[in-house]
Amino acid sequence: MQPRVILTDIEGTTSSISFVKNVLFPYARQALPGFVAEHGQRPDVRRWLDTVASEIGGACQDSVVAETLQGWID
Image 1 (cartoon, rainbow, N blue to C red):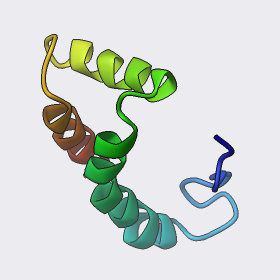
Image 2 (tube, rainbow, N blue to C red):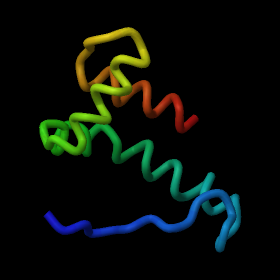
Image 3 (tube, one colour):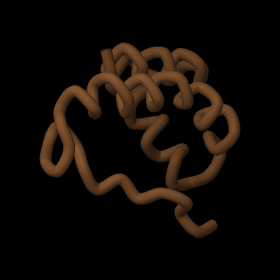
């Protein structure tokens, strides 16, 4: 699968921090559960979901991992 988007900017490198906080973070927060549900079984995504799960105490549902990631965005 070819990437559709490559994010090359974060926290004001070439655009304002307010854009990152007011546009990119809310978009990522909203899109995260759907992305996890749709792509969670891909090996490259599964690896990171499992890593987050281990950070928060072990095996858990993907929805819990998505909620955790959303909390980290906040």
